[in-house]
Image 1 (tube, one colour):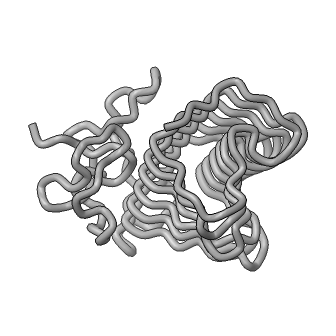
Image 2 (cartoon, helix red, strand yellow):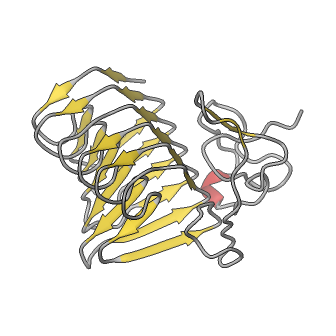
Length: 232
């Protein structure tokens, strides 16, 4: 467990730079500032880097990736993470992907802001291939592509919730996720949410835990996003 709060840097990753194979789990990255470069929260610069069950909130960068910047050419994984209220003065308020091939699984990317494009998620360069599964990307802000914006590369969503996706294709939905109360920051799902029991059960999720340590798969099918609805 690691807490990175109020750190300031002029290099990649004001919170942490992941330059080799590693697992960063159950950590908080909040209110960090990158004054000169990308990634105020986390910089993922190696394909073997995995960020799991982390909360990445209220970070500010100088260029791309207010919360997370991914530049790992052949990979990088974000799993069961909340990425919210981060800011970029350019692109990728929540997550930026540059010439990389990350896998985002069961992440909630909400209420991030970019001054140019991709408030939630931004990707660029022909080598970029962004795989997004069981994720919620909602209520982010930017002049171009508030939730998701790509200049070039591939975007591969499945069983995810975002307004810009195609409803019903590859399990994706475009209906509002029905958070408990997103305005003050409660992005747990309500029982009426269309994101409940509509993800896909990848093998890595079976027997796993969500962001709060609760069982990951309830009622046979996993939920979208970082928080699983408990079986009360």
